[in-house]
Length: 489
Image (cartoon, rainbow, N blue to C red):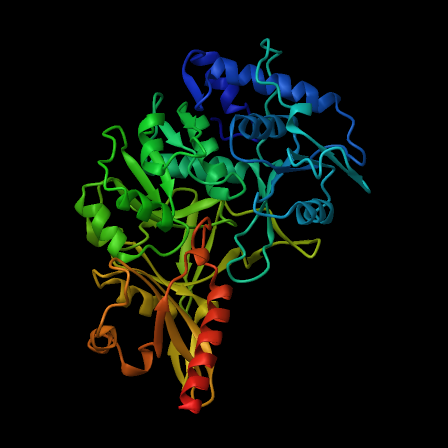
């Protein structure tokens, strides 16, 4: 892929060079690069002739609320090829909220299969089914012209784990160099298949599409109803991107990893020590990473085959990115993958301060250049005049073989201001005995949580990140109920 100001569509490039190579796998059909390129071209034709009320010339925004699948993939590439800005929306959003979000962000069209939305117009927003645009077949339309790599390409919402989600505006260059850096660390080859194991409304899912297209590899769309372990075997996947919950499910399946799998890229937040140890012990090809939506996915990643001691870190900075730690321990990043802007309350702003983006995370870099993420700066709280970083307590708890997952949150306390409370998911169902004694041997007593409760499935299942706001509310309720019981005794 040339580094000039314009670049050809990578799908079309491989369609010309390797037309019969597999590009997209799904349970119902396989597309070669030539077939996928033709489908994208035909979809481009429909987009260019469609009349979308309120559409602005060039880089207009099109919201997409679809489940991941071939239609979504084809539509994304067609939007990028025609110069639109794709705005994927979470399928977890209620229909009315999806419409409001699309309107608020200035989308000219919302593409969805939701019957409550299709065909309705709200102001300048027009809502259509994907069938209005997507064609799964094509006749080899004319060669697409190279487009500027710095054109706007996506508007992606952050996970919102620490507040209201914000929208991050990326250029095609951001996605391009993110994929280049990833492929330099974990090379992809023609014939490889990366499982589309993350939603396309998260930047990690979009990154899978781009890195496969650059390398001439294939994207494998999973069967929605199949387990992750079954999907890895059925799709013939060689690579997958996983968050902690997905890795836990894969380990709990107790099935051998298919021999074709050469890379399991782990991200989406801190990885419990127990999961990391279990995966490494089984000889799985794990890679740990640190990334952000603003940096178009990965920032640092460990190399293939790294030892367990390295996997406990987030690895080294990938090409086309730069990272430094300021005097207060904050992680600052910049580079070709850093987004064009951040949109909050309909106002776009440059996220850089003196050329660097402050991630909101705390960390350190060791003598080998590996990043150690300490935790979120906004999760740190003061208890009785002492700083408490919840991630430190979580890591200490997870070093117990009986604790599979730990989440620590603060609750108000009349004496100390705030105190830590832990939510635990254990390997044996019940909370382990003497967990406090074990922690006191490792941590100062003021850091030991006042209480521990079972971690509810609703706080983690189906989520990229833990719903900490819900756990704080639960902790407060449980804390108040415990206090009332003591006063009545």
